[in-house]
Structure formats: structure tokens, C-alpha cells
Amino acid sequence: MTTRIDDIIQPEVFTDYTIKRTMEKSRLLETGIAENNQQFDDLASGPNKLAHMPYWEDLSGEDEVMKDEGQMAVGKIEAEEDIARKHARVKAYGANGLSALLSGDDPMGAIAERYADYWNRRMQEVLLSTLEGIFNGTGMDDKVYDITAATSVSDENLISATTFLDALQKMGDAKDELTGVMMHSAVENYLAKNDLIDYIQPSEGSPRVPVFLNKEVIVDDGVPYDNSEKEGVAYLFGAGAIAWGNGSHPNIQQTETYRDAKAYSGEDVLINRRIFLLHPRGVKWTEYNLARNPGTTGSTAEEELPFPSNAALEEGDNWARVYEPKAIKVVRFEFNIE
Image: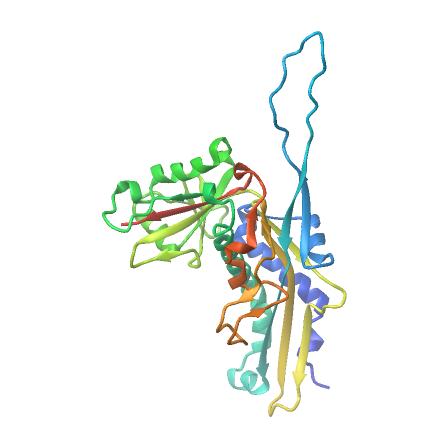
């Protein structure tokens, strides 16, 4: 008997391990920007493609002066709902017997070990597409601070301590709730050269963490940046701004192995499926347009998918603000660098 990949990978254990490692490595969770709990996991595992999250609006209206006759007016509290869209993604990797023979190593073991890093990168891509979409959506104008200039750039157009504080002010008296910022590496480099980035080391042997004006920095080159125009974007976040749920379904095998014995040297394939929520709290999904852009993998024409692609997430028509602006813990800051 020969040991195969399905002998050493137990699907349930591998799935749990991959999800756990993905979350451990996620800077979104480390900074508290994304929040994962059992409620979000249950929503991601529930029926239908949408997850409804009802909430009570805050109390409003003027108070009344007490008097000795008549009756006071009785106000009411109203219910609204935030709506998240489930995601379902899949990826398979394989290796044939000759790859192991000629490399003298275990390519399938390397694939299994790197799945968590792969999903961590892909989740961050989903988030960046989501952020692009919500700021193209309805009611988000008050959450954008744009100081870019196409020509004659001056200090008032540059990202700096002063202009960053102005961007924070988009949250008004709730600005202290913003705890992190996501930016392109070119922007982080520019700030570092201007002595505006501090680097802290949480523990011995751990990587340094960049901090800008007491806000932890997440560096990702997927954040919009135009090198020719020297225009950048930064996303300012508060704790729990993003709801993260890891879902499952009894009829969907999240991890499977497959062996093609007809391949000359044999080929092992490891398949990983993910069902999840990654939702900006307070901006609901409207299910307006799920069309995929022409030219994407597997299609040369627009196609409506059962779950949103990254291109669909970037469609502003799919999003609408439901929380009051200050309750949405995300601000988009657009600026120049020299």
C-alpha cells in the first residue's frame, strides 16, 4: 500500500486548521478592524445568500419641559436592518508524482502548508473590493475626505499629520473610535521618509508594526495608488468596522482530495472551499447587480453569478448606507504625495 494525500489530510481537521491559521495571520483581526464571533459564523452558515442583521435606531427628538397640565408626546423607536452578502469561493491545487520525484521534496505538503496564507491574501482582496464598492454606493459622500489636486500640488493636498487629522474629523466627536489605517506601501514609505511613521515591536522576535499618529498601519499594495499622478488612498478604520463570519454547510465539503490515476505519474489534487461573510457594518448589500465583468476567468460575456465576484463587490449600485455616518467606522482619505 502507498500513502496518498488523502491518507494524511483529514478534511475537517484541515479545514479548521486553515481557517484558524488564516485568522491568526490576518492583520485585519490583529488590529481589531474585523470582528469575528459566533453570531457572524452562524449568519454565514445560515440559509439563503443574504444575512439580515436587524437593529434599533437611536432615540431622537427634543425633550419637554415638565408642566402641571396636559399630556406629553410619546416618541417611538424604529427598527432597521443591515444586510450582508455571503461569499462562496473555491481553489484547488495539485501536483503530479514527477514533481515530487524531481524536486526531492513534497509539493503537496507545501501546498497544504500555504493555504492559510493564500486565503488571508484573498480575504484582504475581497475587503478592498468591498471598500471600493461601498464608497461608490449611496449615502457615503460624508465618509470621504478628498484633497487631491491634478496640478499645482501644495501642502494642503499632501498627506501629513495635519491633513490626516482633518480626515479623522469626518467622524466628528466619534473620531477616537478610529484605530487603524490601511495604505499602499508607497504611501507608508513616503510617511516614513518624512519621519511620520513609528515602528513598535509587540514582543521579542515578532515583526515590527508601523504606527501613524497612534493608528496601527496595515500595508497592502491592493489599496489604490496612482504612481504617475502621485495620488493615494488610505482607509481609516475603527474596531469592529468589518463583520467576519466563517460559515459551513452539511452538503458542501470544505476540503476534498482527488487523485487522477490516469496521469502518467499520478496527480494529487487538494480542493479547499470557503463560505464566509466580510461585511462593512452599516452599509447594506442591495443585490442590484451581480454581473461579472467581461473577460474574467471562464467567461467572455457578462454573467450573473450566484455569489458576488470582486468585480460585483466594486459596483456602487450594490451598496447603500443604513447607519448614520458617524456610526460607520470607515473613512476614505484621498490625497497626493510629493
